[in-house]
Length: 186
Length: 164
Image (cartoon, rainbow over all chains, first blue to last red):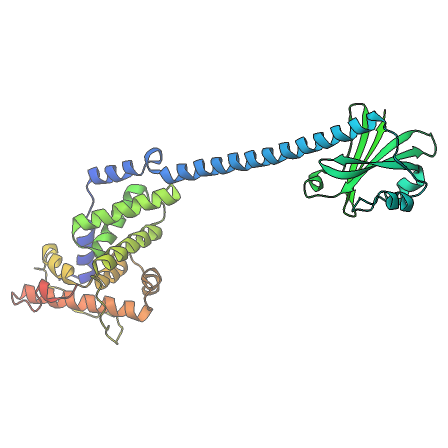
């Protein structure tokens, strides 16, 4: 007498793929041939990295180019050593005289404490109307130039920094919606 | 289990879903290649079975061949059943087995051949455990009836009479 389960097991044990079929399936699944999707993913990832790198580099170059252009403008204006058009003893007076400006030219308190205001004149920075303010260091008597203009989205991309350009030490920063550049000849 | 043994196990499982060897071969090959593309390697029998099953369901849905029938309300597997006559051969089993509904054959295969518990089958096939028990019970009853009648030379169930 036979048991049904044994018969069923024996039936299925008899069912086999031929060795040729097994070989064929395993061959088709070999990594070198069948992992196209993995390769697609790798290529896509590489492309994404390249695009991200390109964008990052591009943005970085744009910012560096912008910074360089503004530095060059400030250094050139400073080296011209043009005389002030408006003599002023305090910033309120200067602001009132330069009424075309649509931003406050009052620098930070520590700067006002260390430098005496001489006067100012109009100029431009990156195509925007700006103030060129002449200052004298209270301790050394050195003449410095402070540039101020309303902060634009482009100028906002310039990070706070201090550097030397064309023999001029230039410090740039933004605060209170105003972009400042302080130039001091070396 | 090495890759060859996995493939053979997958083939037998595919046969429980589609008794025609050519179709079972196609199922296991496609499932194998899909898993390879997705994971790089196939090591897990449960995963292979699930992939084969999903392909089978997709295929059936496309062909609108899935048949749902109310299942027996009584779920039991306890065989306490009589043994078969010694004259019954493996060849006698083939036709009645193919005549079973695919879900009966699948549950029977997983339980009897692969040793899955009713709960494991229920997890794989996403059917209630009671339904799985009922499927196994009914499959065995149909086979036993067919084999008994064949050995008596008075078939009770012809292959074409049972729904697949």
